[in-house]
Image (cartoon, rainbow, N blue to C red; front, side, top):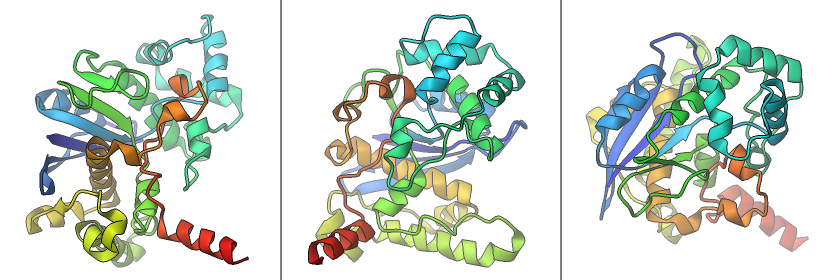
Length: 301
């Protein structure tokens, strides 16, 4: 099974740093095959070349809060969107500047239901304090809307292709997955040259933690696939926080494809908005060490 993970760029410039990590999921675990900077503009074309791709996780919001979608429909003089595809398609024919005007006019920085339910609370797709987040949402949704539905199933909007011919596409939040796996979920992004060595050390800790996840935690993560990376590939993955996020996304896709029971099912949320807003796929049935500690403290009290 070919598995992929994407760290999508929030930059408007082309080409930009959009990283794709792929690997083969075999009986003994996930073997990382390649690390490639495709740029967001060439990502869809690159994916089309991966004929065996079974599942891929992408690090950007697949949609927007329900109230903003209602606002956008009114601004576009359309009926309220009933399906995600109806909400995504107008972005294909809209400039980013026009979309940003709608976001600025709306003013409210709202969360989706799935953002508020994350253990590491996710930022709003319309976070005006972080313009790259708005750009990621806009360009990411445009890219998803152009994928061939006969090959790709963008979840939870379309029928899952896991186990069938085709590619399941899920939204991933790397910080959430790292936290669930009891690995560092901050400190690995290099904000300036001064913290280069420190950030590099944290990235190494993340990769080593993934490589030895089952050995270090015994039965706790026995359902997680073993990760296999050769030394040359390890060096490429350590290069930046973008490559780390793409690797974590790839690992999340492998975990979802092999052990879906570990993931919270959007259909169990009793919130139909997820069919328009999207869903962050995370193995929340794996209790993070810090959350276990909190429960222990509460029990003693």
